[in-house]
Length: 274
Image 1 (cartoon, rainbow, N blue to C red):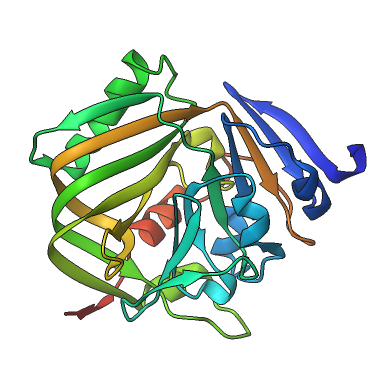
Image 2 (cartoon, helix red, strand yellow):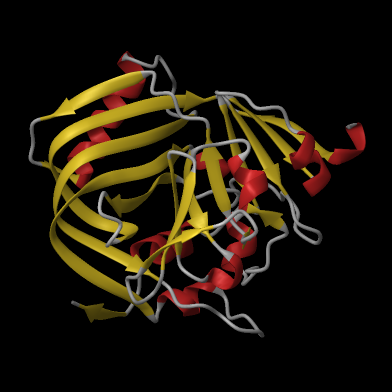
């Protein structure tokens, strides 16, 4: 097993372990561990070929997000099932053989909850999660918090990206041609994580959230929304286990161009759809 552990380090309040694919296959299931395939830094550079399958990832977590092989849409993991939102807005369920270059999941049980009798803007939702994380979960700002917000939402601004072909362009070029769409209202679930700034490059610092509607007709990476009512559940994760494909290194967490990350997360030029 020791040969399967590439790196093992402590970053702030977090224990971060870098694993080979063999290490991921032998990783024990833990309710307070976030498990990730690939790194944000590799994705930014056009690393869209992963070696981990969704079956390997879902063995270790039932809630999460990311993307799939060739950057072919936005991945949502909810209740142990994997869904992808394509660039045309279509939502497809995925089987376990699909590979991912970048995904993060956890075993979600919900340790704290909030009741939304909104409306709450996305910024207000984040602020309330931050407050509840400190008061209800007793976690610091440099710890990972997993989020599941279920209810009715309005003014959703969502996005996805199209499948890429070799030679892969860097992610900043892909999102410059992403597809965005607006949804007036939807009932569904926001899934995501709050990651500390110290993990920038390994993960997206701050909040990274995706949406999936209950009827599985819409979803995507969340750029903006308003939560009208519903429940928000939170869970802390004090470990992060990262599976590194061959040729991908953990690098130095925190060493990444944060302006580029914000541009990629917020989106560039878009093609609106109905």
